[in-house]
Amino acid sequence: GAVVSQHPSRVICKSGTSVKIECRSLDFQATTMFWYRQFPKQSLMLMATSNEGSKATYEQGVEKDKFLINHASLTLSTLTVTSAHPEDSSFYICSARSLSGGTQYFGPGTRLLVL
Amino acid sequence: DAKTTQPNSMESNEEEPVHLPCNHSTISGTDYIHWYRQLPSQGPEYVIHGLTSNVNNRMASLAIAEDRKSSTLILHRATLRDAAVYYCIRIFQGGSEKLVFGKGTKLTVNP
Image 1: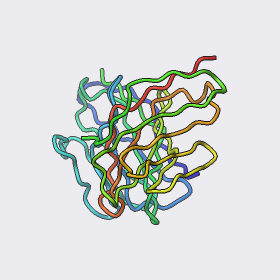
Image 2 (image 1 turned 90 degrees about the horizontal axis):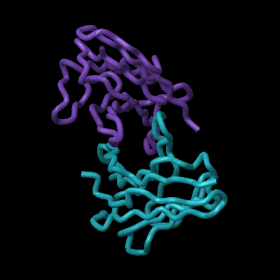
Image 3 (image 1 turned 180 degrees about the vertical axis):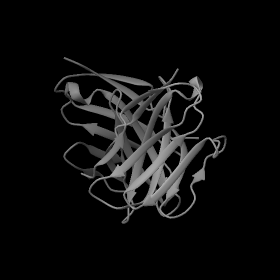
């Protein structure tokens, strides 16, 4: 099956710093990538939809200036959490959809802890 | 709004079949039914999807009711590695194809 990777798998940072998370589709090209956030014991919440070469579309309530998304190529999307605060601590998961559409394939997730 | 309804939890014994139900009574004719599962501390994993006919793959079977208002994911022989949260999601194929996750069903497999 299709493989999606994320880097880093976990990160600890100080409050006020920025953190960049990478999402790569390893064996297919992804026109669309999605970013989710998951708090403990809760379900995944979609944050934004990222299309290659265009601006991301953010879900209601998600601050686009705080969560910067770049989808520069068909195999890479990045999420930057700017000026992170403890309440941003969460499990961030990306998914990618291939050019042919259909199924989304998920990365393993990145656990962010902001101190 | 996930637009699907699933039991919060289910329990099974190892090597026994498991039937995970999902209600999607407001489904439209162009909505596909997708199932994903999430193991602890991992990203979701695609399991299976279908539109009208029953579907089989190496992981599971998907039985879709004739009126499409409900479906059942079938794990033929549960293993300990099948313990996960299972999500039933309806997707309008051809639209934005955003996945809206509900709370899913937490499956516990007893040895």
